[in-house]
Amino acid sequence: MSLRKAGLTGFFLLSMAPSPSFAETAAHLGRALQAEPSATKVLQAYCARLAPGVPVTAIALPSDDRPPPTVLRERFALRQDETIRVRHVSLRCGIIVLSDAWNWYIPQRLTADMNRQLETTNTPFGRVVSGLGFARHAISSETEALPAGVFLRNTAMLTRSADGLPFSLVVENYQSAGFEALPPL
Image (tube, rainbow, N blue to C red; front, side, top):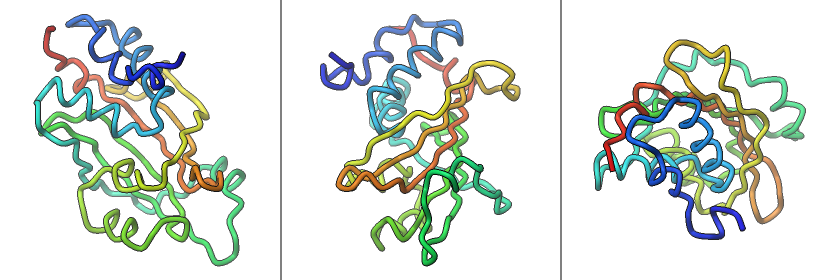
């Protein structure tokens, strides 16, 4: 039975020792992300341990109009009337940075309200698109040869549950400093 089906999505948060090695943290976080389609939900469970009642927020960072990775164009099957937008954010629990995330998405595959929220609020992508009942498909997970301060990089495709159509590619860089802040049980 998966962690998600067992209702234990946040299990990795409760089972972590006060100062786990980053290899152990990456393994726990990776399993939680596989069990839950929304990285936002996983980070919110972690944030609840750090600062109960504080929501995870997405603080906009410069995107410099970074082009989408090649894998996105290959897997999205874009129609001529569809475009790709990029959203680069720092996902935070209060002032603690948990993740630097890049998100390329197709606005035409989201609702008008979802697009408005993504453009005008600090609401994390996963929370904004939760109404789609989406699935997360892991593409890669890396723990070696990463930039300083990053202990895990995950790349995943998000698809709509109703029709399986991909609508987003995310590249998440989980920050060591944010995960060192885990309080003892």
